Length: 497
Image 1 (cartoon, rainbow, N blue to C red):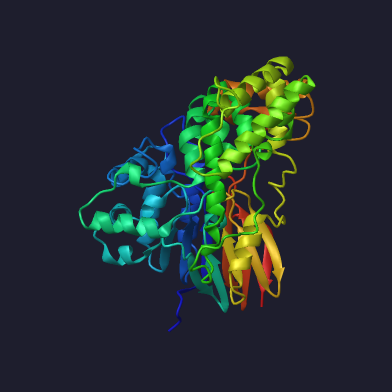
Image 2: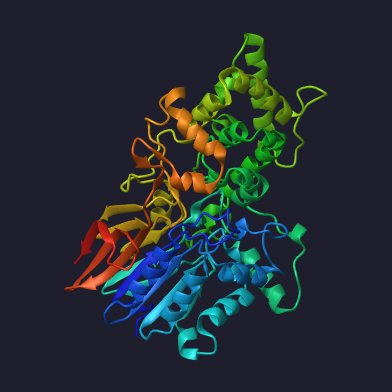
């Protein structure tokens, strides 16, 4: 008997992000997703696994108390599963687990940490399998941060969400286990006891407020450099939160000291250094926005530099109050006061164009061979006996030959994807029609927008398949297209003998 489950086929998708009420939802192509699951269920013969590789739910898009749903976890997940936008997906998953030879694996992400709680797992089992014990046995959970390992042919496959190596979004699995113990013991958790990671704070404290006006903002990754510059240009009301945002950035630095404990068995003690470069306030705002802050006379530029230095000094000293450059305004207030003048001078449309150029600088979103930080850190943490590594989290699909008959995939996402081209951001005039769609704010406006004859949204939903065919194990990055009922289109294929 193998120490790991063995399959003839494994199909992996991630970052579905079911959550939020209508108008606040970022998952698209739900009918396509349901049909894709049906297609996997109908695969001819053998043992087939469907792995949902993290961020299946998005509880951060829900109205919950605090940063994690505890007492209301089952109610929150029930609402999501019963939502008309998502219920059809759960109906199809229920059919899937009732099919002989099929296994459904749910891996934890950073937007659905409640999946680690026993009551939530029982809720999912009940929703999908009822009292059918055979169907229940076909549902597996991976919620301890260990990922999911299985075999396809003679190839070892390892699936993990990928946030384990992300200083913004790491999960504290030990704390999640403590919450689970409390729930099983009939106790609860005071929301004040749970201190979230930096990415969760960014979403809950900043992004969700902006998203209520600009529903599309979640389609851009919030934790990249220059995120704050884009946010404050887009929504001036976020200016008051700049001091808080600096502390979020400080929390990201703290998280960087913990991520190396994930995945690798070496990390039993925290390491003081992770090798990750320290983020700066300049990077947080972005070069164009930071330059706007420094614009003006030389004395003003010096004052702006002083603001940035004071802000950076304080976020590096966790717990220290933000030192106000004068007695009237804190660092955040002064930064915004300066930025207001710059935005007024160049126009909000031009300011947003420059902020987006900062955010998307050196963008390699659609380069499937780009060896990004997630690739580098995950592959460095996984042993050489693993033949296929599959992650998610970044929303950026990848297919990389690591050499030595070893391969890396990222399963991308099923949420909407906006694509800003160089032509769209070239100058104020070319950006104007884009700006009008963005400031409309509604997801429907994004869905219907087209520039230069091309849709603003990329019609791309990704899946990874690893199959045993003709004595070889084939790994494929695919795109699920049309209504999802047919075989996905192969984008890249690797064959392991």
